[in-house]
Image (tube, rainbow, N blue to C red):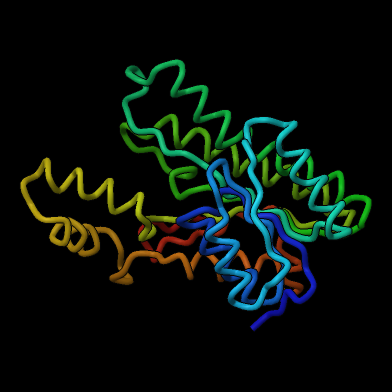
Length: 260
């Protein structure tokens, strides 16, 4: 198992779901993690502390705000002396036909999903260029590579994350900084269960049946992705073992989608 001993990491959207899974895995491998979220991430930080990462902490951040993200990165560097790993994971999901999406929902989706990645990547890059080292890891989506009805706005935001990741990977490579994106498929989170429960209810079937139907039809490996799957991929990209990987958008789909 690759070690991240003595590394300092920030994970946005760390209060639950994929962000929590990422934070837990980074801490398990030795990193000190600042668990950042618009909502309280104190529970996540407490979990890390009790699991052997006593310097891990929580912080409040509003990722569409450059000032908020700059303050988060600045306070992390002031406290710990450096920033080794920046995980731009915070995001929101928008569902609806493009013709029906409101201005507010469109702007909020772009502000959080791509604006948050821009703000986090820019703030981290400024620090990491001075250090001549670092890892920036962005949460995209399989839908950043795939068009589906009613998910066009969300897909557009995640496609932008992938292209920004690729460009930034080229820009920062001379400074010993790698930049990569992960494209999860259907991951088993609270948000996923809630969405599937609503669909199951509308179809007059149980949640369990809906989940099984989806697995049978869509995912060749026969299971949904887990928080641990996400955490392990982030941990690998953050490690020295991935030092020759940059500008990538790695699939984490269990075969639900297969892309170059």
